[in-house]
Length: 266
Image 1 (cartoon, rainbow, N blue to C red):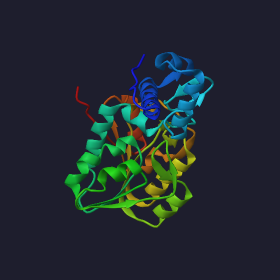
Image 2 (tube, one colour):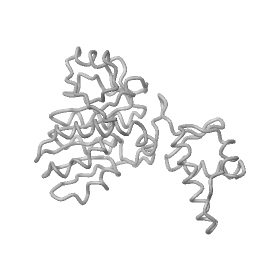
Image 3 (tube, rainbow, N blue to C red):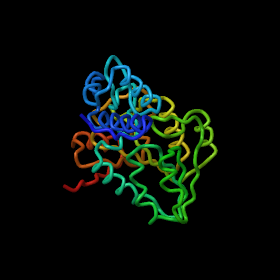
Image 4 (cartoon, helix red, strand yellow):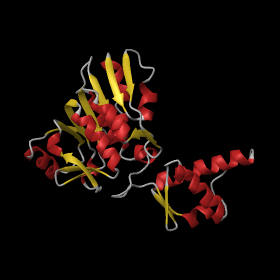
């Protein structure tokens, strides 16, 4: 059984919910009954805890199961996504950062792969970053010689970002040198996301940028999502990692897309 601090009742509840979230984020999916045994709580308490975590966009409940993993209809929370393929995402982000020149204005989306570009941005200033991602805003807001344009709109807890018609309306009034985005899935030469609002927000960024770069680790080529935002040929460059199958790389290049492959150490 996981140990929970014995301070106040509220502190114990918060600590327990944090441990529950960490357990589900780590394993991807758990049965609710298993959580009651692991944390020594009643089924009613487990449901209350999970309802709170679900309301914050961290987890999903369905038919006796709690999940953090994505499906073709629902994207995972940013917390879960950030734990997946971390070495590949870091390598891709480092390689993609080389595409940015000092003095440019750049759209950066809410994806956890793009977030990993933050450590490389200080060396590229002066720079204007335009983003809908609250996490990214917090990460760059104090960076010297970096101008931050934060996109507003409807806030979504599961991705800690803004999206929707108000967000896309703001994007259409701008023109950036570069847009760097990631998506949930690449299937048959098309790029997909589970959320129609997210797909529309990313599409708006592409339409308002001079160059377009897609960041996609190898798992994106085996996933499925519902809403297409365009074809891979809409991008000037795709940056992926060295675990992406050779036939997928070949297929991209046959469509006229430039591809760069990030080597992952270890």
